[in-house]
Image (tube, rainbow over all chains, first blue to last red; front, side):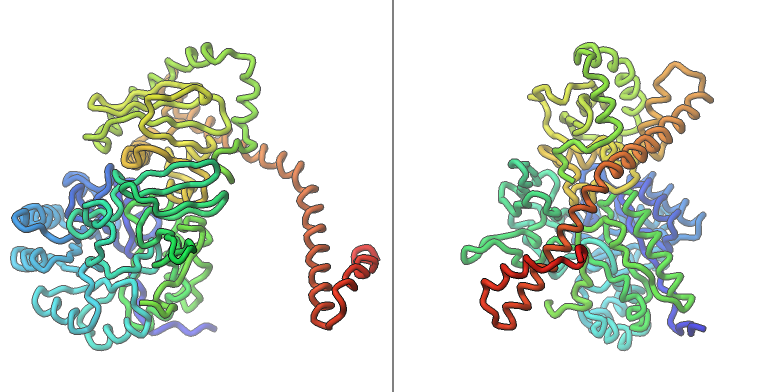
Length: 336
Length: 234
């Protein structure tokens, strides 16, 4: 008979870019759903995406009714002289009764901690808290209760944080887009487009993205720069510079990272054993079909693990992956 | 799948059946239905499309007719279009097999990103407008405006019948797609089996050749291998 693990059951944190995606996540078994407002206060500030204050209130109510924790991401960095936009977002989140807000900016964290001491604070991956001392600092100053670790940590790195900061919950990404840069500090997209992922909430703004078919070849451009050419039948990827294919010494190759999706489903037992509290799915920009499929698969994987079984088949089987491939990212690789 | 190629599908067959009908007559006949669908859809997508404007050409690869979607301050308008016609006013273009487009509008199957990654969906022009339209349609589908429901609701029928018709249309479409896939499999499976045998035989010959080269035999001896009976022929 399989032995039941002694670790805590992992919490499943899921993305929602629209109310329909949120409903899909809740129906598929999310423990928590995170979403953002329709402005530059969140890191998925794409056209047509995100929640109005009224939609956020409805979403929070739906989550509470279904026993799911609603979280609002206010995870960009407040522009000087425009702090009121970020404060207003915190005020709205507190008013609609979310279970937590996810912040990156120290000023926003300070405002939230001071104004709404009972509002649970999570530290966004955008804050790039990459060592135990940084995590302790946020916990001590702003009573941050959970930190989302960068996607470049190994399982041993994670264990080091959980062991040294037992009072702070740790959340890690296990599925979705793989950002290989120091999140919150990357300026590649800003350099090309003039708009910042960290201040405007958009990496590769859709307004700057153009795709063209040149016969059977798909060409992707960002702000006029050609960043990839996908050959006939070759799986495509997102139009981000970090996954662009560039020519160096006469050879075109991926200099930073291939178009590939993170899928660390197989590592769930290791993550649970390392003291991780919650696992996160990236993809607020994805459709509800993606949300329903991957959340359902991860729900089954977590439940299986909690019952002493294996996490089951990799989520990549669902066929939703960038470049048609998956990786276990930094959890297993040497680069950082 | 190549998104620019027409897959074998029920709509491909329907399109062939429609060939005798002049395009102008078909477009004129479709117009009232398309207008009614747009009127029903427009208030449901206006909020998510707020501040955006442009024209998206939605072109199935396996059907002779598509849609032009006009987005502006007054909401959304649609018009049927011959996919072979010039579309000079389009600011964005979506081209995919009809069932990929239907899944996209309904938020089922694979999402837009996955279809794009798999090259089942071609998107050109104003990316922001297409993304916003996609999010708006997904939310509208949840609000009771999924594609088949929209079509049924636009017909002059009693309310109860509309809901039944929408379910029937959806079921029939998917059954037809399944049937067509079965026909396709029946035609292609013998070819695939033949190809698998050829591939296996080729792999076996390459393996023998590699082994022969490792053993230091002269390369010309590979020719003699061809005279050996293949395992499946012995």
